[in-house]
Length: 65
Length: 480
Image (cartoon, rainbow over all chains, first blue to last red):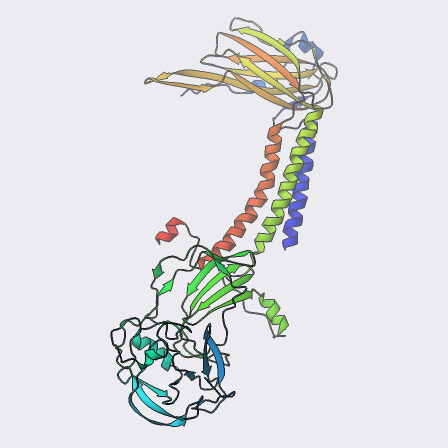
């Protein structure tokens, strides 16, 4: 049982180290970003034609303090 | 004193054994009937027999006929040799003498003041510290100290543990109507360089005896017993007037006992935690801590290694101005190049929002592949004074990490929503920054199992010390 705990933790620790190295190297982060393909090149000339997924976000001010 | 080499018990005829009840003080004890012979001058109490009469047995030392008389107002009947002055105590009589005289230290250390003349002096009923047994009144309450006159173990002087600081005030515990003056045990003792923590001090009372013992065991005998633990070892101190005996024990698993004696079936189920039972979580916690520390070091190494390769480079810095009157609020930036490998991009959005909010719909668009990374960010900054107290909420700037962006030529499209009549936005783009927060997340992940195991180890220790004189309980439990 002791060996199981230690071995499991050693594997877990190795996985954490590997995941951290991969995340640091590839620039991984938790930020939710939509990846959209085939954006029309006309967007640069007519930026208002681009419709973002985030455009439907509801923006309301609920007040300060 | 010229004594025969082999002495026999005057009562049962068994060969007497010698016992050193304190350094230099030798008595002859009978292993069969548990009587003991004390030579003249070995007792600190002058014993004067009342109404002596010839006894049917002989002195074990000089073989002359002994005489029988009473002490302590007739409560105890003793045998004395009129020739050599030695006294014979049957089993329990020495303890009775101790109780009735109230003198705890009955055996006198060799060389102590008084010498043999003390017994010849006339009785002095109230003369401290020793009251003549013949006229002594029972002490109330009797301060019972254990008697082990014929016990053969002696203090092992050489490896005797060193007591730590902690010998505190005298406390009078009561057990089953018996009182004893004991001194508080030290908090710990050291033996062989190892520290043993005090676990428990108790005063066991002999209620019955079964089997053979290498010492005289008498019903009513008591001993002050202190246990010190360093699992799996248990160091015990048994103290009587005459001696202190240290024993070192080691915890044995029930299965080992069953296996060693080839006992049938399985050992009974364990209840609770034994004083010296090894903590099964302790080794886990120790090893996992080592692994965790090594892994944490590797994480730090990975961070510094990746940091050394990171560009951490500002690739764009562009300002936009928006007004409510603009018919088209969307803007695009100039092209900029994201170099290096696939990595992150940090966007710092700085605004001049003042008691307003703004929401920014941002797209990072690859001009070559037409792939967009779309996200939104809300910025609000409010401040004021209420009831004379200044307050503020939010901030006029924010930063966003866009993960895993391949290298290439990019531009930004920004569309704001705001309740401000006019807004200035400064976009600052940095390529490939090492995120230290990832290291902290990794450390938290590494620490979580460690905390779990340490918590389980602590539960085990709590169960162990719950049975000790030092239970580890919360204050609320203490109140109960």
